[in-house]
Amino acid sequence: MARRRRLKLAELIGEPLLAREAGSGTRAAAEQAFAEQGVDWPPRMALGSNEAVKHAVRAGLGLAVLSRHTLAPDPAGEGLAVLPVAGFPLRRQWHLVWRQDRALSLPARTLLDDMRARLHVKARPRA
View 1 (cartoon, rainbow, N blue to C red):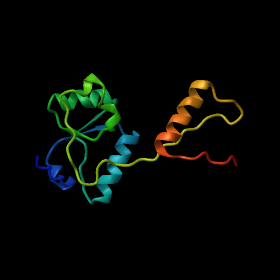
View 2: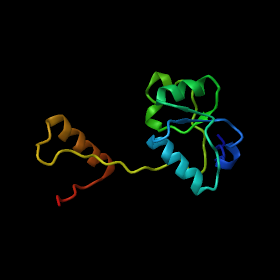
View 3: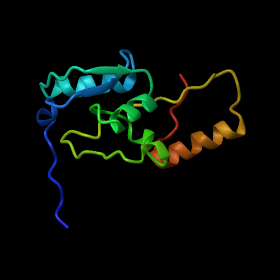
View 4: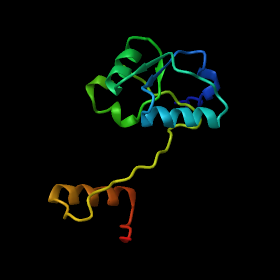
């Protein structure tokens, strides 16, 4: 099977862009990626949730940049396709924080241990 070529971001700017609302982390990451590639692609429509963006894409209103975890295994992700675009996926840094003066609950410790194992992250020493 032939591998699909990766599209250049500039090839997509003729399409309407659907985006999250101003201030959204997803939108900020997309706008930063656009700027880094010298692409001016203002959104045609801003929506307040990932679900609203997915519904608008499914309705044929445009393309969107969303976090992959918002698509599957969610049944609402059905009918959507991930386009192979050069420079994507965008990588973002996440931080897990908790109150230093309280012990973590068992579910919170389990989540932290799982994340460390999956991401190969070691605990940082306390300041």
